[in-house]
Length: 418
Image 1 (cartoon, rainbow, N blue to C red):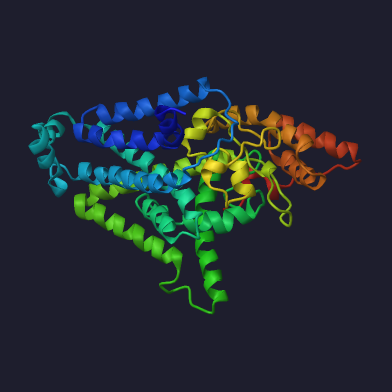
Image 2: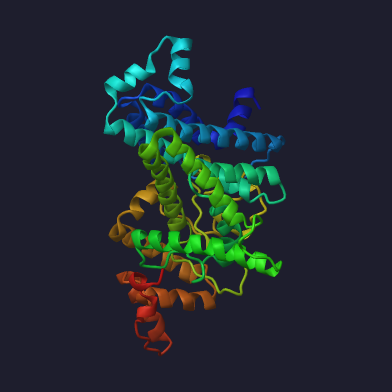
């Protein structure tokens, strides 16, 4: 293997990191550049997904130790981009003297450029780039690091990245709640059939925050300790987030608060889009173990690289101890998403289109992957989904059994409790 091939093999998982790194000097340039760069990233991802083929290889990595320092560097770069949001929102104040330092090195007066060319479009672009950095630090790399509970430094770096996007609950709720409850009604991050993304997002965010507190309170209760203690990881995480918010307010006042809330909001929306497509409509008997059929894989090449292999979601849920570079595609055993992650995200924003395209895949899962017990649960959701093809399939299913079940409001996705 040549040096170039070896570099690509190990660095392909960090394409997103290099995009975020490029966003730092582009933020310094100001004007229309940040928004143009953000739009370029989004369009490039969508085109890459549409043009790339399936990737189901399972290469071995003889120097896998490289991935840990690479993830730590990725977190630092993402945090630096988010700090750049604070620097921008503080203008014309030159936070940390960064603008002056750049001018002394290059002769380029970045402060004058911002004063002459910035607009609301610049602000949207900078906050958008910060949001992408937050998604990288919290969902892609941060998610992987906080799963490595045997490595305290990895968990710390994961939570540090999450703190800069107001997302530390993820390091508790995801491994200790979502992984145990996924595809059951007890998991707020599993979307029901027929539940549109917008309703799901609100229900999921509220449910996950509550679950985070409940998990820690229960853990401490078993230790016979009060939840109001330093040992409460939820409180420590929210304390980290509070320090980040305080830093942004110190840097730029109300503008700084808008900046960090914008970064956090984008990160939350991206995570909920991921949650939505990764388990949409899949069901599991609560007492039964998680299997690869209980998560939608995306074996799209571009998604595999950009998401740091999280797109091989089925294997991740079947065995969360497996590190990202060793995840398998499980072709034929795991259901697959409509398209890559980015394109699927876009479709999910249009519920009628999503429902029309996903119905066939759900029915294929019902009849070719689900157990008889899971098929019964799926047909209950089909009947109440409001999606014509699913409703028709459920009626046929019950008719063949000589039953005439009635649609129940308790399972109406538009009426599900938050």
